[in-house]
Image (cartoon, rainbow, N blue to C red; front, top):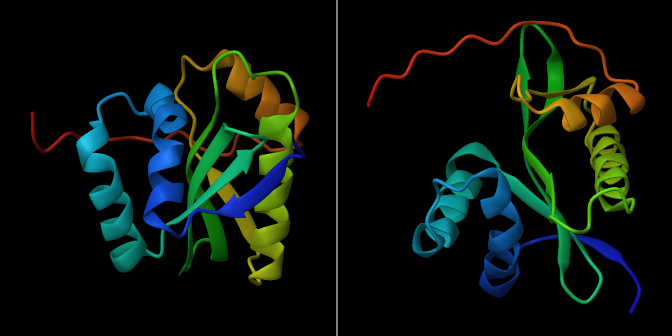
Length: 143
């Protein structure tokens, strides 16, 4: 079976992305995933793209927005390849698809944040010619 990259639109497609997404977002319970993704799709224009080759190999959640700092941009909330499928090119194919999709949507910039402990991801992003442009600060409002 060939590899395809698609947007998860149907409930079954969204659910099929959960096992891979849970590797990056383990705090999101399986029974909440569909509802949370649907809510983000409706309120924030969230898109969920995935690489499939018989099973889901990599997943990316993203938004297209606009702000004064960046103009029209794509922000990638989530990008993860399945454990055991990393370094096989799936993440790179999905990253390239996201960049092409952002260009197709008229985006001027492409952004994402990556946890400071994710050294392999940082090497991947630097190899994809991304630049480290800022420090991201956060404040938890709920414990």
